[in-house]
Image (cartoon, rainbow, N blue to C red; front, side, top):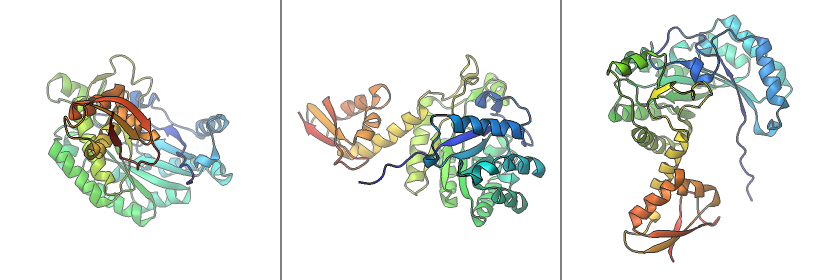
Length: 344
């Protein structure tokens, strides 16, 4: 029997807007992270790590990783970068943490800055590419181009880093076709992972003003789910895992009136994963009207995907097959991504 794969433990340290040369039209990182914009210090870093280690959920077997999120980490002064990373070194040397990851802008990458990261145990660098269309990047006031992303990925790979790319479907000027083109470009870069963050209209952003003026219309939830389903299928069929779908919630972000519009859903990632699963099992379904009552067998770990959010998946199957589902049974002899349907 194969050993159960353990999910890696990540301890986040947020640096909202720090190191950023300007603010993008969609950005309000204080609300997204529930962290105020203020200088981080080594005492705060060690406090975060010590608290994580003291937790009953902390397990060295999960290869714990420290992650700097938000802001532009490599845009910080080199002395600050070294100070932050040096605070983590004792934990790495003791084996309490396995590695460090961080996120940054594609145009804040060069050999000197990357050497500092490499010398201090950083293994993964995620790039906030957001789009591979220069006109969309310009509208969003990103301040970098698609070529900057291509160059950054090349340098990171040459220096042996694992590379992540973060994308945002639904930016101003984005369409289904332009986002498909972005996905094709990203597949060509062959990153180690991708995150998908559909755009939300958050209070306090330039996008809020554009939304109120009628200059920007966000994706509907169903549109965004469909964008992400298609993107996941295309990326993962090329061996590129999608490790996050949808913005992570925070107490500040969930306060009433903070998200003004856009595809926010508390189970957005699950909606997408269930959608991907149902496309995979479509060929296992009987033809409409072939049966009137059925039972379905599936691997136990995939039954939640089969059911879908609030049993929407089962309703979809019943609509397709014109048959009533009477039973669902776990069956570990069935391959992942497959089901067995039997008449009752």
